[in-house]
Picture (cartoon, rainbow over the protein chains, first blue to last red):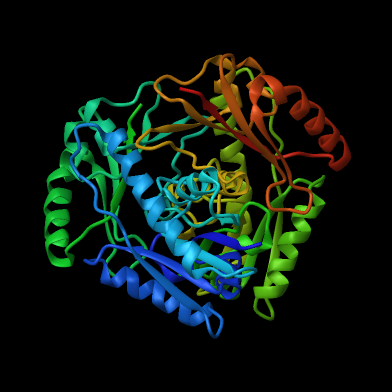
Amino acid sequence: MRKIYVIGIGAGDPDHLTLQAAKAIGRTDVFFLLDKGEAKESMIELRRRMLKAYGKPGRRIAEGRDPDRDRTPADYEGTIADWRRRRSEVTEALISEHLLDDEVGAFLVWGDPSLYDSTIAILEEILARGATRFEYEVVPGISSVSALAAKHRVGVNRVGQPFQVTTGRRLAEQWPAGVDDVIVMLDAHQSFGTVEGDVDIYWGAYLGTPDELLISGPLAEVADEIRRVRAEARERHGWIMDTYLLRRRT
Amino acid sequence: MRKIYVIGIGAGDPDHLTLQAAKAIGRTDVFFLLDKGEAKESMIELRRRMLKAYGKPGRRIAEGRDPDRDRTPADYEGTIADWRRRRSEVTEALISEHLLDDEVGAFLVWGDPSLYDSTIAILEEILARGATRFEYEVVPGISSVSALAAKHRVGVNRVGQPFQVTTGRRLAEQWPAGVDDVIVMLDAHQSFGTVEGDVDIYWGAYLGTPDELLISGPLAEVADEIRRVRAEARERHGWIMDTYLLRRRT
């Protein structure tokens, strides 16, 4: 039986790698990479260094072209579902073509595979179609949420209190009901600008990398600084990945 | 200046340790342990093995007695605040007495220090009192949430959707507003029993350890099994630490 690892490799710091992840990398014959042609050169380089440090001799890399998707769709979930299906077809072709019987394959996932990542869902979709068979295992990783909280030295929850993890898209609609602590992922539009009231923000970008940026303080006081720093960094690097915690004072 | 690491060591699997955590352990002169006299022998043993594997020669251990607290308080937050203050006093005494100038100390925290753990807040409380000075750094760890999701091979969120992390105490009051996916921590009373409707549960205990237990399925069908397995395990081990994801079908 073929086996596939879905390996969380942490938020950007090579030392976020767990011993479990390093061992899984060392057992892998074929690494599957789905990348856009563009950008994120520093992240690709980091992954390359991990393979060099922990991969076994003779390991192979099977690269596929990540399908394009509409970044500003009218029907968000429908668009994502369609993109996921096309992505699963590219992925299935890679697995069928490159992973031999009794070999071990792996996907390296930034952060933690359980948090806003589609690899698990894509593998389930392939298995559900029934044409390509394999077993698979998920190796947890340090999420950008854990990395953010560690760098700011804050808890994501307050004593006995709940918190919510949501997207920039949803925060822009309204502050989530029933919580005073909100972590925002996938926010391309600085939705913190829509938030009113007495709120502190803990913001971070390129977490764990040499380019890491951290800003925190009362939202009303630091929002403009975050917008400015974010725009400059995005311009300089060609891409940005950021996340933040909003904490309402109570 | 004295330095203190707050090191997340993962949910129970020794291979959850990150390279960053292993390096921080290797730089530490004094490990601070606050333990109850009782129970969790297997977890203490796991920590001992980590120190043996990654600690430097001559490292010391400074042990303090964790203050007792009322486990069924009328005023939950007040009781926790009082317990935290007493805990910070014990901790401050340990640091003052055992950590010399220019030495490095460390607290080893299960899971991730940002998630339902009080170590960061305790260090802030000590610094705020102003009598004991040190710098400190947080090393993120694999949380029980990431470990749970990895073992069940599920995402904690669905596409573009938010999720909430909350406590058993709060779930027993009501299903959180605005979310269909809820992760429950610190649930001593199997509060999933109060949940109605078409919900799947992904439950895990002793995650990452040889005693790990995993049960998943429609809540109505597996709730009794979880109660039975949980009660037997708790009886056998003398303690239990469990967490679960509830996913409402939509």
